[in-house]
Length: 329
Image 1 (cartoon, rainbow, N blue to C red):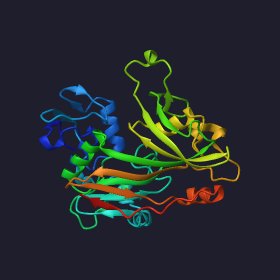
Image 2: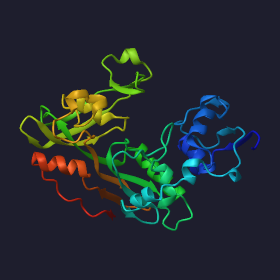
Image 3: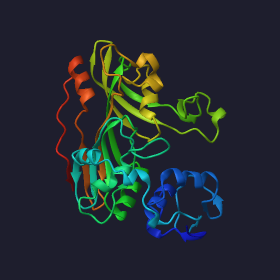
Image 4: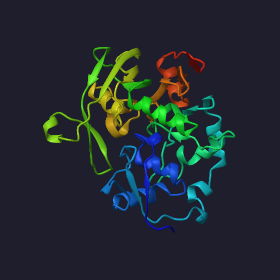
């Protein structure tokens, strides 16, 4: 157990999230322990309390409280690495080069760990080294039950550039969803602010009707949508393009359209279910186009997951095969 120390944020760590900064410098500290240290104010940035998502600025000082020694051993979830899950994840690699790795994230696998989460993409990152000395780094997220394209950085420099591209909205994201009902009009834009509110079953994202009531907590959220196909008035295949990246944005915006995403019990309730169809979230990160850290543009598409293939077949929707991942000049 070390004593209290301070560290200075380096120039190449500009705009890095505080939790990711910690994972970079102290990978042996479990996520839960880090959250507790932040919650109790033992970790401070320039002498002030901070949150996991605090963006860092070069030159800032970070107070580091006594931490477990790395020699004490890795956290339990790393010692008990699920080899079967690791091999499955390796088989889901869509694209790989020296800087970037893209995965087809499966349904039900969280991207990051947390209380009560024993397995996540983050826990399995060592299985994705593929001979590299560096552990891959997360640069964005998908919900646990959202499937599809997830990009990882294979170096520190690539992580900085990819994260900057996401922050600058230089990442073009395309999602596919099956909704219960068909929106009117069949193509348009949802520009509806969102706010996070506590609830009996945990935090929940909701539409904000009176922004004045949520001063300081409202986030603008914009989504373009179009109906690709539909099965009468029963269900629709939507292409969704988020222009902002808010938590659960697409799910809440589909509810705002009067067409909840099939299987989304949290936001759609019973109205999000159709008899005879899988009670699983039908939201898929189909395509991602982003500036490649070494120049040019990387475009990756992911195939539909099994439960959405089943639903597409039942509704008569025909999805094209994903294009081969490519880095274009």
